[in-house]
Image 1 (cartoon, rainbow, N blue to C red):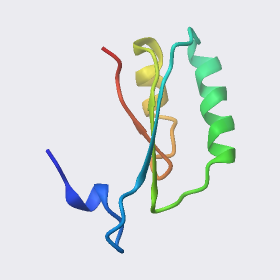
Image 2: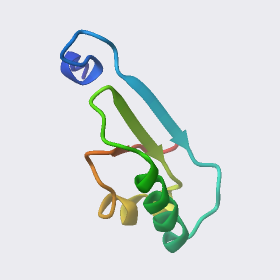
Image 3: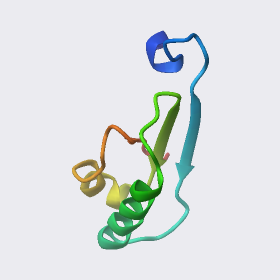
Length: 77
């Protein structure tokens, strides 16, 4: 469902959306390390939304580890 508050910031400007659809074959430990390194480099910003779409095998383990203030998760089809 479309939620206008999630697409626009308080000033009415659109958020920058970055989506990473992983084409890597990482195990859970490698995926966790990658997300940890990304987390160190990405600052929390109200005008930015980062979505990670890892492979199905690591989706569930990452869902318990990610900082939801910085990242959203998506699945691949």
